[in-house]
Image 1 (spheres, rainbow, N blue to C red):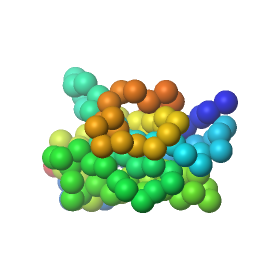
Image 2: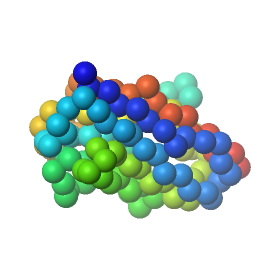
Image 3: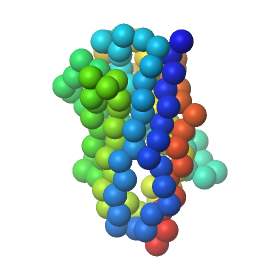
Length: 126
């Protein structure tokens, strides 16, 4: 069955960088919308970025553009999220999600995704 496993979360100092990974198994992954979400402490889960496994278009939450970069390695079926210049507001549990079909401009940020990983924790200290 479909499984998404995130890794790469860590406790870091403000200004640092992290690269999160999401290993996807159990499907062909030829045409999926895959996204990253995060849930800060005490807050609801929010969309970060998404892209179709067929590429190349990427989607980002407006207030997160610039420091976050999403990418996908089709050979390894792995989704990545590069986060630069981390700040304490980035502290959250980060989740990977997947849904059959290409991403679309309005739907990528919704909670529509059928498959979700367990998340990886990112903690940023000042």
